[in-house]
Image 1 (tube, rainbow, N blue to C red):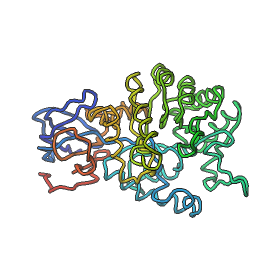
Image 2: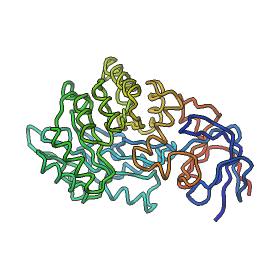
Image 3: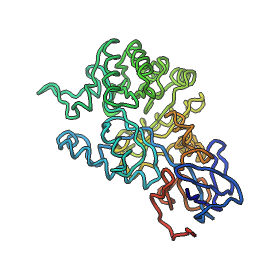
Image 4: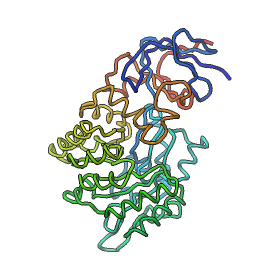
Length: 395
């Protein structure tokens, strides 16, 4: 099998946050060597450029694209699936090589990517956002009652009430192919005070987490804006808290003790601060700082298309500005994200044996202000999927 040499670039060690000049050798879909003075069958001159691991978005929505709200629920189901095709292409060109869909994508979309029918990052799915009656996953109209435009055999009913029903909803999602169980423990940030209200009892949350483990799922991801819901999720053993806009000391202490990740999705408040208000934006940044100080691990997620998927890498800048710094934000978007998804043995850093998901950036600094503008080449599973520079391949 041919060995491709990426020579002379500056390589980021995301664990240490340090860089050094090194060669990287790729064979098949794996990185096989990192060092100085290496050789290969083909070579790419990376001099003056920075090599970083492929980015991982731990909270996105592939099937919402540019239409949300009423249009999303009024369009044909086929359009909602097909709109994921340009989204996946966009993400891959921006160096995003793994995504965790936080509701909307089904097992067929994931399989289509695996088979190569659609170009895109590897897709992990949660199918629906499970909730108790009245939660944001319970689609209901006061005029006509239940409304479920997402429902079909591959997208099971997400609503439950009580411990036994909590176990049953996990089993329904598992049967339909969910990798993760997505739970909405509070209302939406757009619902005002309901964003603070805990909508799932501690016993229900414990049953969801326990059953997900029993069914061999990767974990439970919990939509929680309010501190009490986040704290209860951590006590139950949830793998990650999503958003966490209004965390407090008790919540982050519980999350740190349980090893629960925070996926802050700062794009929902920082880029759209004019919609939610400066107070919410400031509270969100303060929550991230509290989590950092408490030792809570943080991974990158966008919640797009709250913002267009083309802005995915803006989230890295928001993380940096919220207190992680450039090196910490890059780590959150690569190695920490891989750890959250239980994939760190396979990807998330530039090291021998890891999957050859790589992004070549113009310049050698760690500045994340305009990552998208710096991208010159992307490799996914060892294959070049984007090249925006003069060909430097010497055969």
